[in-house]
Length: 100
Image (tube, rainbow, N blue to C red; front, side, top):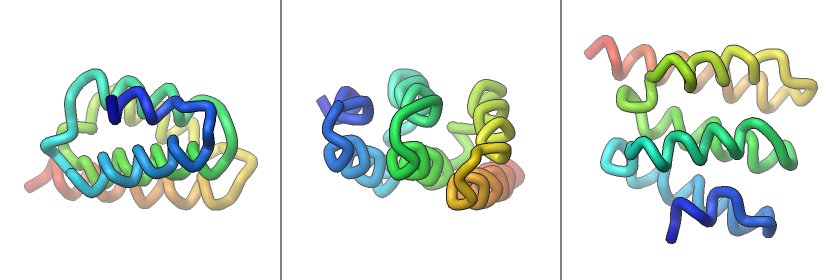
């Protein structure tokens, strides 16, 4: 239910779903959630890409998969500076949580 809202056509629904899952944290880190957030990061409006990126950072260590790291590195080249900044912050958060 909530995972499907990540890719909802309504931008506010997508953003709210990402925010909620990010607030849940590591308990939300299922393969389906992570894959769907990666899908949201890959397209759509900048606000949803940013929300998905930030949610992955809140999920933490369990989101530190090669696919997520690759997507974040790619996001560091996004045309939108807020996406680039979020990607850098998320990589740092994931790295810190994985190191502990």
